[in-house]
Length: 428
Image (cartoon, rainbow, N blue to C red; front, top):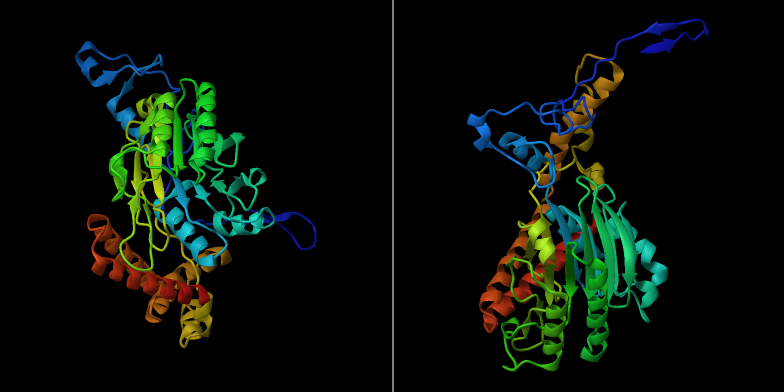
């Protein structure tokens, strides 16, 4: 480093040492972090002898050959991308905003659609900044008579999103994965409660299929209608007009359910007394090109917790190694006994080096001791997580035994405890 002299004549040379935990791979050919020169596709491939022909394969439209080791490197460079839809019936309450953020965080979601938000257009900016932070977002609020029906937010580091069309019941977007430039068409649905009005949606999806052509297409959301007889826990044994309309639409646009795990019934009726109806009206569907291009895609329907609907997480590609959680400082710790002593003891540590290096080392030393102080206060975060897990387990039992009133009672108690703990956590 060249440091100018105070009197303005010349400069002084100083050396600054930087400490780092790891050195990422960097290709000298294309100047991209994440892979080495040996695995770069731009480098010419060496000739392969006939004895080793069985260990190589020819990619679809590429002229160069790729070894199995090279394929493994490419798979590591393609992380799992998660898309989420959740019908939450109102996004104005802080508790519901917190739960949406929790689902996004714990599943590594990069695109989230909130259905039945009920947020007024004038309040969208404030609510979306609270839920999506620094993500981009949009909605179909301009198409709705009252409130906003669909809000979508996405991580601009992962996707380029272009809205193609929208109505009060659906938003169609074109999604480009920035890492590998793959393109899919994605439709987010929140169908009307009236089967007559839903016919407008079915007709709109049929027209959109012409635009999609032979490209991958995913449709996710709340269709407000069962598709098959086994999608209801009770009720009529015949196919209703609503179901027949939905089936005809699915056949016309040539989509089917993406393989899924988790809850089968995605919506639950919560009556004040007795056992409510369970129903599958939330779905993740894809066309043949999508299933062919993303054969490992899977939809996960998670517990609904304090809501009426299950969140749906669509996972695509290989999962990326999970990184350690970043350190977050809890402001209320400054009022706790021992806080100043902890800060003083770490700040008095003797560390050699330049000022910036010493500052970083002391701040890093503070992390462990401040985390310990946080846990001694009862760790409200852990309590909320434990109650959330307890509620998830009980709701899985409801899924297995929908007519058991004792389990329903346990679910009500667990829901109340979870809401109380969440409110306590928000006060801090």
